[in-house]
Image (cartoon, protein in one colour):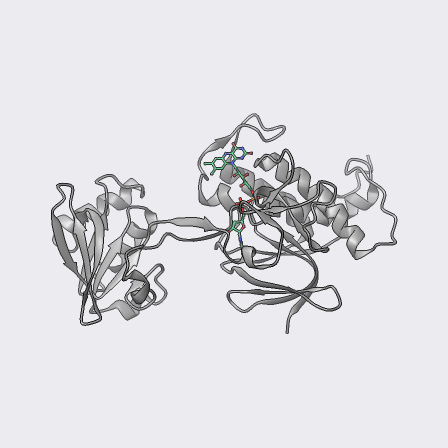
Length: 344
Ligand code: FAD
């Protein structure tokens, strides 16, 4: 059964999160879908530790702290998050409502859609060698789902970040052999994990190798491993049953491009009154949209979310007159925010 709702927000970056708040003030409940397993968009995925200096009223705030505070702010509105799933299909029905489907099969029947998809859905950075596509999902993988199935196998892990190191340490004594390949000698992972991995390598419990993947080794259509060039350019053949690539995630516009929207240079054209796209009922806010003078800033996404919320309300209730209410003084706003009335 599809989930029937007034609004689905695609993207849980700062714009999508603040959209929940602005809709909530107008008593509109939202479902939020994101392809990442956590909220926060670029702030959470690309620069959680970095300080931001241009959020109003915060001389400085860490990117993850901003996300945490947005989550705290939207708590009264109880949004429903559908994480680790990418919205793959969006179709308008004859009655004007939309059917929206995700990669895990969640289906929504929604009156409006707000696309807050930023730079696109975050996807794993892939091995780009010619034969890689032939072995994608067979011998070349980008996530580990059932670690116990790797027992007895010769495993190659690519990467130098936390995922690569965590899995290296986790799997080294559960598989037949494990080779960690990283292109540099310095790692992005936590120093404690790096030290642990190096100690295991010194004890001969795994192999640490530095080099660049040059090719996929194939024999009679069977995957054999990788050829890797070391710092001197010498080629080494590293044999294995399966490769797990942990090169991080990069955003990809992906399915958004296929929904019949007016897209210019990978951004969706909107008006600046409603932030509506060329399809009535589909709105776009944050980094994903464009209009004259657009600046890809968190601040811009917040403003766009506020106006889009009023436009969504109008779309849902065209005849209802809406009055602007201040959160400071409006009892209705206080009720929606769950604020106790101060009797003193
Ligand atoms: P995003 O943060 O990109 O979030 C979009 C979300 O949508 C993602 O989580 C993605 O997974 C999801 N998504 C996309 N497509 C789909 C789909 N089909 N299905 C499901 N989910 C989907 N801005 C500032 O204002 N000040 C700064 O100081 C600043 N510093 C920055 C520093 C760095 C290093 C970077 C990279 C950016 C910085 N920015 C800064 C820019 C700021 O991060 C972006 O403007 C902001 O994140 C845009 O928010 P958003 O919600 O529109 O999109």
